[in-house]
Image (cartoon, rainbow, N blue to C red; front, side, top):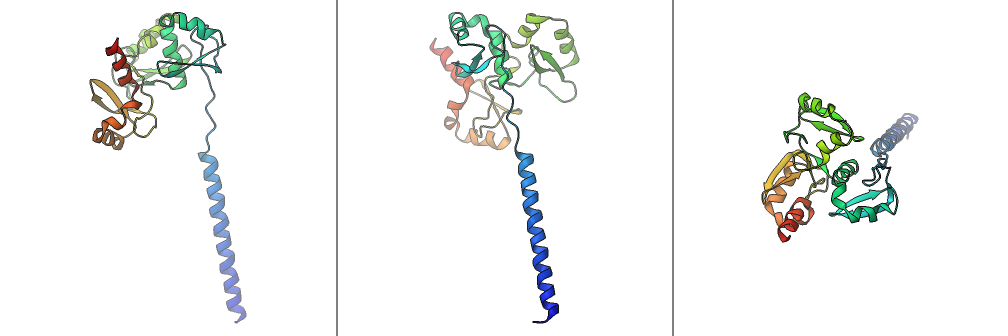
Length: 215
């Protein structure tokens, strides 16, 4: 084998080694970008309004509810309806519920007219500057109650797509058994319609409807 052939072979091997190293470095860099820091836990105790703790937890209406101490759940259980607004606010903080429309008018939200407003330590959207002005005129508990006293207009108990388990997208919605059901994408919507019974257990709004009928 001539010296020229040996030189060419070594050069090729060197080039392949560089390409492989570059590819590995790129993959590692991509992994670092994909690795997201876990979201910082933040929840407001519905009883005392203090920062809640992860270990002071109870299940309420099928969803997680956090308190600032081990005594507050007992106080809450005595008169849970008194704390409805505070419960809804916390559920929004922790992602147990999702916003799908304006909480004041029930109108759809868009990227042009919608306005972000801070309410009770969280940020929500309203459909227009007019609604933002109405909220700005309210103070303290009245402002929080205007948004979170009822979930009917702006929020849903369904925070995840029943098919994929991913966060819902308000744009992908159907009406099923007189209740709105949201999905993360059109494909999941089709999968649900093909076999609804398979996914009904994952829809909290339908569970709530059945309980109301029993009562």
